[in-house]
Image (cartoon, rainbow, N blue to C red; front, side, top):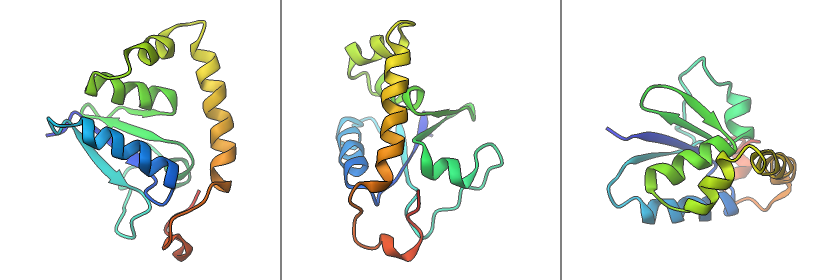
Length: 126
C-alpha cells in the first residue's frame, strides 16, 4: 500500500512535468499517482469536492487525511526525502505564508497555462 496518493492534473503541461520528477524519484513506490484529468477518474469521497480537487493540488495520506497546496507538496517531499531546504521553508512560521501566497497566485494563473491535447472533452477542468 502506498504512503500517499497524489492527485494531479495530467492535462497541465507544467503539473505533469513536476509529477514526472516525483515519479522518477519514487523508486520505492511509496506514492500512488492519480490523474484527475483522466476520463476514468472518480473522486469517490465526500471529504473533498470535485471543484476543489481540480482547482487545488491534493495529497491523501494512508490515514485518509487530505492535504492541499503547500502542505501537499511538502508531504511529497517528506515521503521522497527530497528538497530538504524547501521542506524547512514550508514548515517555518515566517516563510510558510510566503509559500502559501505564491501558491495562491499560481492557482489563479493555472487556468491560463497551455493544456495538453485531449482536454477539450471537458474531463480536464479547473
